[in-house]
Length: 93
Image (cartoon, rainbow, N blue to C red; front, side, top):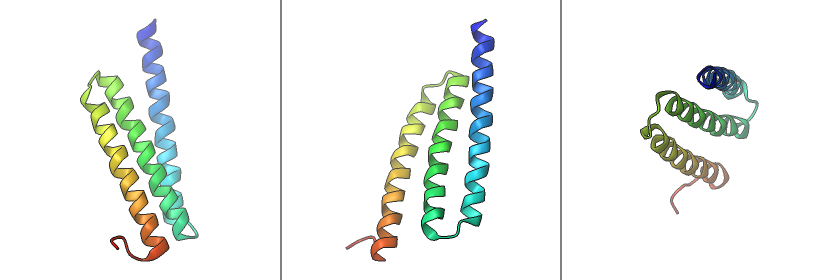
């Protein structure tokens, strides 16, 4: 009973994150401004982290969670650097 419920929840999670990634890609391509595109990229990183975590749950792998943590750190640093570049035009002062 629990195995079927977990499989259904994982399938729903993968589908929901797939739809979210598709909508983020649409905003990335169609975004009216640079800030909208930057937010779409940041949200895509968050959705990919969710996909990695779901894949780790499905496979029973601890490595996926470490990869998700690394992806979160890189995504955060990338977002901060890109925001600083948009505001000041220079990343390194």
